[in-house]
Length: 87
Image 1: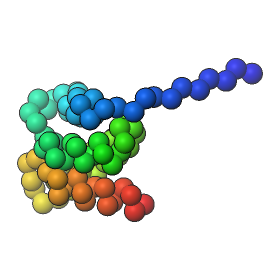
Image 2 (image 1 turned 90 degrees about the horizontal axis):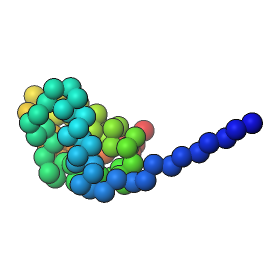
Image 3 (image 1 turned 180 degrees about the vertical axis):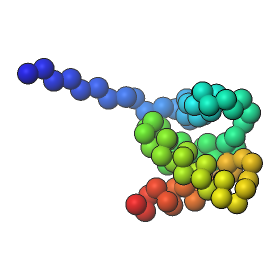
Image 4 (image 1 turned 120 degrees about the vertical axis):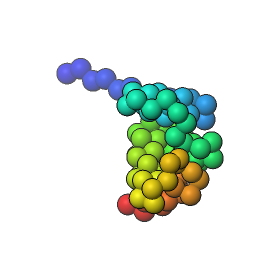
C-alpha cells in the first residue's frame, strides 16, 4: 500500500487576492469584482485556506447578485461569512 499526504500551505492576504483575481480572469472578468474590504474579510475568515476561500467567495457573489449590486462589498462578504459558518 502506498499512502500520500500533502498539505497546502495557507495563503497570505496578498495571495488570496491574487487567487480571487486569477479565478475571475479564468471566467473572463478583468475588472475588480471584490472590494479590498471584502477580500480582506474573506481571507481573514478562511485563514487563507483555498477551499474556504472558494466557499466564501461563491456565497459573497450570491449575496452581491441578489440585490443586483455590481461589486462584492464588505456587507456581501459578511453575509457570506454568516451563511458559511452557520451551516
